[in-house]
Amino acid sequence: MKMVRYKRLLVAACVFAALSVSTVSAADTATLNEKDLVIDKTTTEAGEQVLPEKKNLEEVEQARTGSIEVVLTDGKAGTDKSNVIIRCQKVSEIVQGEYVLLKSYKDAGVDLNAIENSNDLKNAAEQLLSKAEESTNTNVTDANGTVTFKNLEVGVYLISAEDTERYDTVEPSLIAVPTWSDSEGEMQYDVVIEPKHTEKPDKEENTAPQTNLEENTWRYAGLAGICVVGAVVCIIRMRKRKY
Image 1 (cartoon, rainbow, N blue to C red):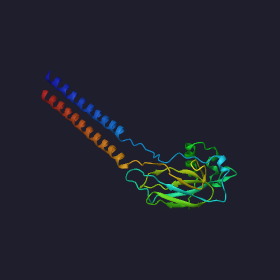
Image 2 (image 1 turned 45 degrees about the vertical axis):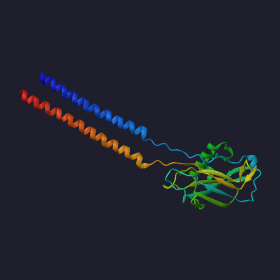
Image 3 (image 1 turned 120 degrees about the horizontal axis):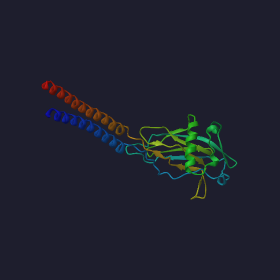
Image 4 (image 1 turned 180 degrees about the vertical axis):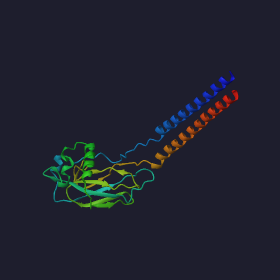
């Protein structure tokens, strides 16, 4: 009778050990999912921007030139908005009150004349960037995160940045020269743009919890294995004594 009771206690101990491992591992996984998921946050300091309407394009002076000032706003803590390489590429002409894509961009599947809102403009910029060739019109931002491209012909320009570990990921943008100004009530040939940018996730914070989870899982599995082996040895010894 004592032998049967002893065996039951050993079996219960093994089951408890196995359940403990499963519970602790599940708890570790839950903690990882809740605390360590990284969600990109988009900086939205820059105002919503669209291309000038057709009625405004009729006022464009083709012989004039203009400029685009690119201003990078503060990024994630610890980043540096200086010395970021900015590219300025012309993608479209303005002909008789309409936007006409340059030859190298015609197969991008974009119609700038159909742009209605800032989301359409963003999608168009991304599509045009995928077709963009290496630009010779590049410059780097100064200590304030600013760079200016001068003597630009009338048209639409694609502004993009070379990815860098020192700053956020910069979204490509489209801006026209000239651009209509509601405050001035006229077309502006010297324009300013603040590209939106997205924080980059911290790689070290993402990988460390996963490594810790694996270490804990193996540790708990080892403890459970020791308990099972110990129980089996005890049962064998008790049987030998009985006989």
